[in-house]
Image (tube, rainbow, N blue to C red; front, side, top):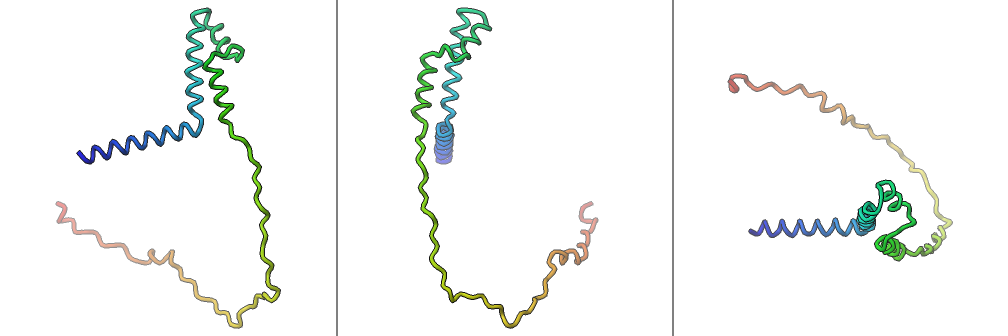
Length: 133
């Protein structure tokens, strides 16, 4: 019973995450616009031919009340642009006594070849066949 309750909460949480992402990306406007166009097309099909209904629905000259509400909602949702005022990076003055000096002794260490090392081992012996028969 407890596992089922947890599964329900996990599913509910995933659903809310999907709804939040869809809303954040603005897909709700596309969904509402699709509903508006479908409704307009159905209404326009009652009054005329299919070609006339398609033209009247998608020409932009005959918006319905839902299309106007969607346009107003999109316009009010647009974010205002604020200029980014990032300060110029200022670096502290470097000390003039800074000098890089090479080491007096230098030894080149031998480089180990670790890539080819596993290839030197002989293959493992196969298991006896009598045990599999």
